[in-house]
Amino acid sequence: MREYLLAITLAATLCFLITPIVRIIAMKSGAYINVRSRDMHTHITPRWGGLAMWTSMSITFLVVSHLPLVSKSFGREATGIFLAGTFIMILGALDDLYDLDSITKFAGQALAAGILLLHGVQILWLPINGIFTLPPNIGQLLTVLFVMVVINAVNFVDGLDGLATGIVAICAAAFFAFSYLLAVVNGFNRAGAPSLITAVVIGICIGFLPHNYHPARIFMGDSGAMLLGLLLSAAAITLTGQIDANSITENGSAPLLPLLLPFTVLAIPLLDLGMAIVRRLRAGRSPFAADREHLHHRLIELGNSHRRTSLILYSWTAMFAVPTVIAAFAPLWFAFFSGALIFGASYILIRSSLINNKEKRAALV
Image (cartoon, rainbow, N blue to C red; front, side):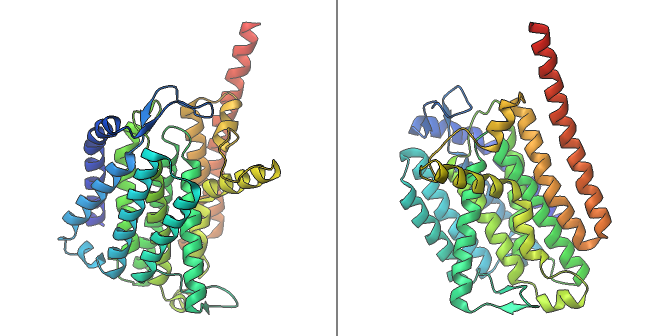
């Protein structure tokens, strides 16, 4: 655990220190966009945050590869994740600079998923009637689709200062806790790509958040959103690939959890993505046409501030993620109780905001 904590600390420190440098480079390179009607910010802000994240990740990998335990995490899968992450970050950086069309970005995301497949990162089984081993071609297709869905879910939720950064940090923390505890409880190797990748993601998000929280001085842009989405999806896939599902069943754990976890920890981004697609199709628009009807827009319309809205959506993310992890290692009642506590906290945040706004309107009258 100490080596993973070192990886988190190193990634956070590097990202915190490198981000201001990248901000200057982005402004000089023109990697920013003028304020649009649908934007929540009011000042021109650079977008190459993903470059700072990738640089911090790369240096962290280089340093921790010399540690006794974590060095065993590096192999074919970790190499594939790094190469795919590098490719998707470059694609996102070009989009931040030139605003690429959707088809080009989708093709690039599929190609990044293909890089993962070439290095053995693939969904191998599903919990259907016990454990169902997937045919290679079906597993490859599901892998590509899963990677693309997670990438775009993270990208869709990146519409408010610090929102995507905090949500991804919570998701990565849930993934890390699950993968590490699963290894400890079931006697698996604690040095694995899922734990390493999620630890680094936690670190770069912590380091980037002070620069990205409202009022943001830099955005992660597509370079950051797509990088984080790919890293999360790859960590989830490698987690299932490294686990003998039959072994999990024998030890009393639910084999569904490794595959359920990505959807619970990413519940808010996936919900926002699904609602946006349905909403836009019903209106006869492209499912990827931007609007101001995302979850964070609606919370702000209720009178919540930027920061309070982020905190509410952080709590909603934790409300799904934390109970899922707890349910794998503790009684279900405890998992539900933890979820209820987090829901109560989010309700208090929303309720207090509504009361404050009502009082302000009354005072104006």
